[in-house]
Image (cartoon, rainbow, N blue to C red; front, top):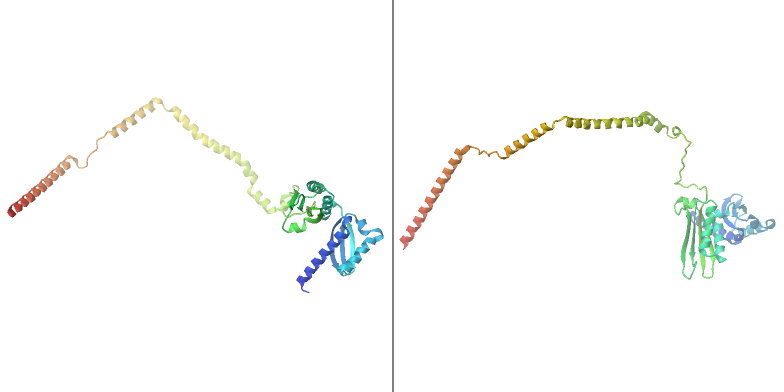
Amino acid sequence: MADEHQFIENGLQRSQIDEFFQEELGRAGYGGMDVAKTPMGTQIVLKAEKPGMVIGKGGENIRKVTTALEEKFNLEDPQIDVQEVEEPDLNARIVADRLANALERGWYFRKAGHTTIDRIMEAGALGAEIVLSGKVTGARSRVEKFNRGYIKHNGEPAETVVDHGQGVAVMKLGTIGVDVKIIPPGAELPDDFEVNEDMDPEELVPDAVEANEAEGVEELLEGEPEEAEAAEGAAEAPAAEADEAEADVDEDVVEEVIEEEVEADADEEFEEVEVPGGDEDVEEELDELEEDVEAEAEELVEEMEAEDDDEGGDA
């Protein structure tokens, strides 16, 4: 058989054994199992709320279960070890079975859900989630969720940290699926961090401590107020000097300076514009224009007379 087929066969067998224990040991508070194959046989560790009911009087019940495992699942020399669950309210399988039994006894689903999740959080869980799916009320199926605290839904922590359990409540209208997820107290999550106040920084990051000492951070911080005061004093000094200079200036002197500036501006506005070249150049240019105009007028007259003579000869 190929390795892939062997993995599938082992997983299927494990699921069938788990269902068998759930049916046989449901009243004893079945809380899960661990299966490990050894050279001596198959080691099975059962977790139960009431180990006495699993073992039975004189070990009668446990022998019956061992025989059933050999016959139904062909296990070689199964060895069953029963362990008691210390805190049943933190075991997802037990909580799911309890909630399913409460629904079958007629508890309203909201009351049952809130009561169950409150008991989980009071037991010290970091987070919990309960999902009820099915015909909780009426003929239509729906999903109801109850959340408290912090819960992981995906990634490796969801497989290794979160305890997952399922149960089924058989009702008159139909079955209701019960899904419970619990993060137990003390679980280590990847995003957890801790602040050690008693630790010495030199032991953790000696290089950073040495760099800070070399730069003299404390000295720089102590010198900052003095530098700020010096800068403020330097900024105030020019302002004080300007005020004193304005106070020393005589008002009469200021008025005289203003009057002189006003007169100078007025003289500049009314200055005559000087023509480059003088008046002689302007007269010469006018004479030349007049001569050109007279010459053009004479030419026009001659042309008109010539045209008249031509018209008279033709007549």
